[in-house]
Length: 371
Image (cartoon, rainbow, N blue to C red; front, side, top):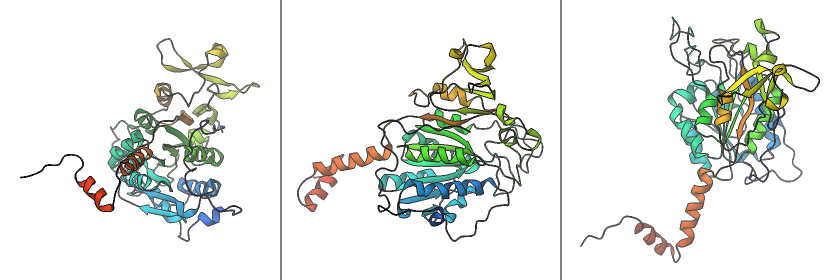
């Protein structure tokens, strides 16, 4: 669907400090596949994401023992069982916090969080936004099916207004979260959105996310065939929405003009994004403007305002229009790198025997001498 841009020039990638496999060793998806029976409902979008991740992990060139997946609670959170890496099925909503501790203590690990819209944005909302603002070295995959699947079909923080479910029999009155807008508002340094059924695009986004130094946040539109089937049919051009995909998906490619719809010989769609006189981002007919008026996507812009404005184009009721791709990819200091540097500096300043160092530590900071 789109071409994902490479890591920022000169950026320290998320895996370069992690031990690689021995030279000449070739890994396959089978080596990253556990012996556990995969237990999701038939047709669940989680299967597609799992296959994409299992197929992508060998490309990292990392040892399996240097990769860890942490999940919370929910259908998506069974993910660590199905990967032959280290993993933890942790506490409801707290996976980002546990992953923060792992990433800070172990620089030699590639740390991943797998969560869902309910797990991450309801009970886990506070943990998620703080991981994003701190910019911890981890990759967060948020599976968004816009429903609670594991508990059998209640509305979630991303369900549309009016959604009829077991917990909202006459329709939800909650206004939904836009996960990408939330991540950009927390100033996450890498924010992307992809789709479970688009293997090529999903894999490309995963590669860019893994290469990023800092917190990478990836929202994955994921279909729940049992409790919310067809939620993304327009974006996928399926069901009653065949032929709508070109107008439902707004592809984001760094450095490229943002157009969509039916494309001409030059590759421009018949719809385009422009910045209006009021400063808002608007959709217009490409034929009605000059090409230099079309908004050019800049994922590396240090100011997240434009990326946030683009994220607001996502239709909140039925997803018949949504930007897809990397919204933001910028460099800024990471929490765990800075925390480790502080510890190293403190250790370097203390000399002498172990007893001397312990005494200096005890007497550091606020201490009192009682006569």
